[in-house]
Image (cartoon, rainbow, N blue to C red):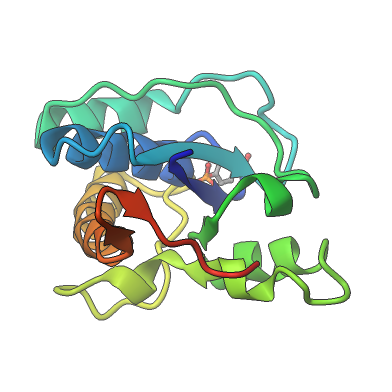
Amino acid sequence: MPYKLLFVCLGNICRSPAAENIMNHLIVQANLSKQISCDSAGTAGYHIGNPPDERMTITAAAQLGIKLRGHARQFKKSDFETFDLILAMDAANYQDILALDPTGQYQNKVRLMCEFCANYSLKEVPDPYYGGPENFSLVIDLLLDACNGLLQHVSSKCAKGSIVKDKS
Ligand code: 4NP
């Protein structure tokens, strides 16, 4: 069973699909596709079924040469069980996720994406939806930094080809 990562933003059309696809790109490069898998979701349901936002797709292609795949879905309670680590893009996403876990039993599985940044000191991945090209560009740079840190974190859990999972 692979170690399962879930990236979560508000709409699941800008930040979290970019995070999912950048992480997949790094996982393939590191030859860890069998060990780590990725998905993404939004806390809101506004864009269910939609592909990633074209502005995000264009920026990811220009800066990293990758295509963004996927269709938006909404975060659901069963995701707490399905996934090993849930990465929230900003503090509002983090609170909205934890609001679905009133007893706090899955709290240790939920982290802020920027905790894994090495080069950026921003604490959140800013919502680019109402912004311009520079906002989308920052999202890609920030996510690449965080995904590299996250890959190190998850690979360090690899022991003799398998992954040691945290308790819920
Ligand atoms: P995301 O960006 O959370 O990074 O996918 C947004 C997408 C849609 C909206 C807001 C943010 N919206 O208000 O529809």
